[in-house]
Image (cartoon, rainbow, N blue to C red; front, side, top):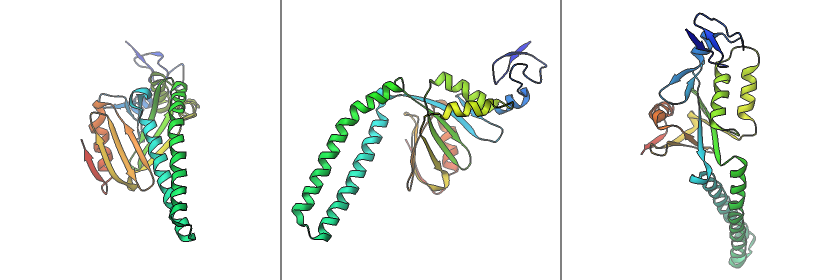
Length: 238
């Protein structure tokens, strides 16, 4: 009876201890690629959970909305600062209103420019936003990866399962290349909002706001894990 190496996929005999292709220790690799639930979550030997999630960028416009939120918040802060400076310096109400008007015009221009910019970014990512999530007892890391989900899952198996050579370092480098990363420390999370139908869990801290996406079949596991490790957070599940 034949079986496959969890790392490279090569067919092996039933009694094989090591892969004759990549050199991985089969028992270690199989233990490292233990699946959690019915989805794509993988647990390694250090009790770290990893999974890949893919979102269509032109369907949800979630990234664009996040950009708009940042722009709006930044503009409000700058506007309040300018008004305060004008009042302190004795510039008067007209000067303060003039500064506010200039900021609003600039904000409007940025909003308009963000639309073609978002389309360009979407095309550059083949219309999909693929994310690698890594979660342990301390926190969760959200890293964008610039590849298709199927390829990312193959690389993730190599990254987690291998115990030979530098294949894990290679896979890790490929997974994280060119992508932005956002880490939420559970101890710093103050509010959790979970949306089951969307497969979305929002983690709000003092300075960090993270979005965690997970397949429906793994939603309860991930949500309960996060909530149990954030005892001080206010939680809402919908």
